[in-house]
Length: 324
Image (cartoon, rainbow, N blue to C red; front, side, top):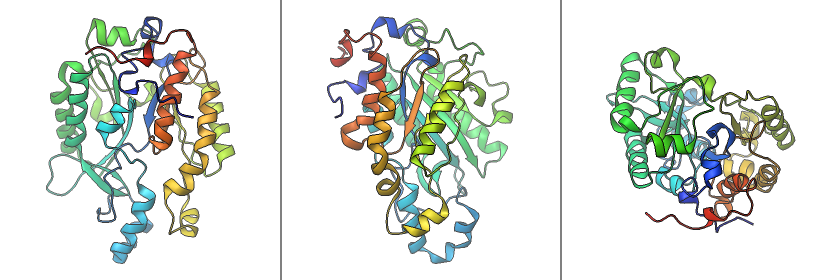
């Protein structure tokens, strides 16, 4: 049963003071996998990240795009709705388009242009001054140096002083440090090291390791997640990808189905049970990401957030809205 009485929109704002002074790398933070795919439809164009086989099958036209859309879409919610339901980490994959200044989000097919997301995040942090958002630019497709320059310039311009400068010591980075003392609200990870050099506001990959389970087996998935948490470096953040990844052969057998029906809904109960078994603090879980984070009345983000309250179970401040 989802803990719907948790005020997910303001969960960071409402954390007990004890937890607002804990390092972010010791808290449980809900995130979304392939975050910006809600706008993908059967009319979306094939993107540069699509596998070579799919690129060769372009001649199938609308039929191919219909099948791809069923398996490329990993979220139902826009960025604004995800922010309001408590998601604070975003897995972002971008690709360029001909004659376009800024890149688009992709997952086999093109989704929205990036300015939609940037505008929504800026509006959210301006109206939620005690919330922190982690933007992780994971993959870049068909990017030239000029494209990196345009994207970085956009991000630095829009978020400005809200960006947390990179530091190799993450133990002092707490919610209180960011939002009370210095008014930082954005951590920006940019996994293209040659492009982020000399940029103090872009965080490198090694500070937020995010190993890919790459499995269609539920048992294998949770085994890998548990091993990852048990061996994580304690000086950095850590992302647990609680997702199944279908192979081409698996998809071929289920062409008329969808990723949601075959790889998300069937394991939703198991992923919630796995989350409930976790703990925060040193050696514990940190960022947990999943597909279709709105399932069962936002149970996924609610259960991840709930892990933080188990340290101080008598404190109920998170259950009521802050006065803004």
